Structure formats: C-alpha cells, structure tokens
Length: 329
Image 1 (cartoon, rainbow, N blue to C red):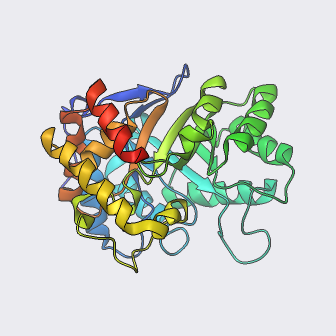
Image 2 (cartoon, rainbow, N blue to C red):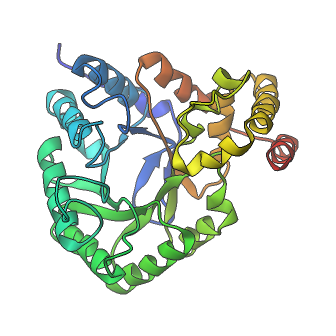
C-alpha cells in the first residue's frame, strides 16, 4: 500500500523556531538511538516512524553509531525514507551525528576533519539523502584542536552536505568556545543536543542554556525521561541493575530518595490528568530555549502516549513551585 501522510499532521503538536534562525522543529523529535536498528523488524520500525510523521513529528534524529550495530539505525531510516517518506523530504528535518566509534582504527572516532567528513558521507549513503538538515559533532574531542573541528563542520555546510551544524554533549564552556569560532566563520550553528530532564538539570545549573541563548542557538534535549525512570514503572523502586545512562549515574547513590521524588511528581501528574512521562516533557518544554525533545518509541502505543503531552503543556506558577520543591528536596 502506498503511504499517504495524515492531512492533519501539523495540527497534532506545537512546533518551535530555533532562536531567530529559519529552522523550525516540532516539540517532539523522533530519535532512532534504540529499538529501530538491527534489533527490530523493519515493518515495526516503519509503522512507528510513519505514525510519528502522521502526528506532527517531522524531525528524525540519528547518529553514525546508532543501531546497536554501527549504521543500522541510519539504514533503517533510509529504507523507510526510500519506500515512504521521500515525497515529503521538503517537510522533514533529518539530523545525524559523528564522533563516537564509527569504524575500526584510529580514524574511526572523534572530530577531526577526516572522521567527520567520512562519517557524513557514509550517513548520506545509508539514508539515501543528498544532504542532512543538521550535522552534529557527537562529543568533545580532547585531542583535536577546536578550530579544526569547527572548520570541518563549516566546510560540510559549504559543500552542501548539511544545512546547519550543531554539537552534542558539549559543556557550557566547550559550547561557548566553539560557538565563537562559528561566529567568526559565519557558520550556521543551530544548537547543542544534550541530556536534560527533571533529574539531570546540568543544562540549567552550568549556564549552558544561557550560552546557547547568547549565540542564537537552541537546546535539543535527549533522555527526557531519564531512560524510563520518569514513568510510572519505577514508583515502587529502582532495580539495582537498572541501566542508568552515564548522564544520570548519580541516581545510583541514593535510589530511595529518587523513588520518593518520582512518587511526588507522579501525584502532580495525576492531578493534571497526565502520566508522569507527559509531565516530565511538559516541564522541559516550559523553557522556549528547549527547541525540541528527542523521544524514542518502539511501539505505536508508546509513541502516542508521548504525543499526548500536547493535550496539556501549560504549567502554572504553583505547579512549577511544587515541582521545584520536590526536585530540590
């Protein structure tokens, strides 16, 4: 059956401009980090991705090392793009990243000119694209001088392989340093994709949001649910073997205290007629500098639960104060 997108797709979610740029993103972006590479049948991935687009999620986020096998998430996206989404290319924001392990040998990671260039070329081949909309340096490179990384990203824009560039997992200080070079080069720097959620607030406390704002860039938040902790699945306790992401590893030091926070937050969510996950996303989107939240979903049901955040995204002053009290307790 030939796919035809839902005609009401842009009525399902709000969308946001990245600072004062011409780039607009949906409040929710679809991430292919987990569950949609070589772990799942293509038919399942296709169903979830097309349902995302039908619900106003027109931004798809990838990376060269997503899979779990390198490149397989991009190949999955490429297959669905070729079969269904290609007619909608002008509506899509497609992003990818390079910097973590991509192929064997010393040139298969980090952010020198050769790894970045070769990785983007491979990504374009896998996804059957002429260009991506945003290309990110996936992590800070302690060995390569920052100007080379910035100039490599700038060159890829000038070659027409990406429209915008970004960084991912950069600290506030690192972001400020590369943004200054981008300003000098007139590179269209769009933002930083970092872990940000109710439990991990480094984007606020380190001044990263302020740095991005000063450079007319936005924050794209991954891990908005702290790998699933900010759902109702762990209200009775966080298992000792729970796979905490490195950005949330501090939770392991005091699991009982965080379970108490989760239950208190869940009570607020219930008062609002929301799930804890929906409250967590609404809380992130309270700040206009958070341009989009990268969500993952392995099923249509999971996806639609996330989309329902749009039913109630407004948080009153009393609710925000109560949330702040719980998080700071």
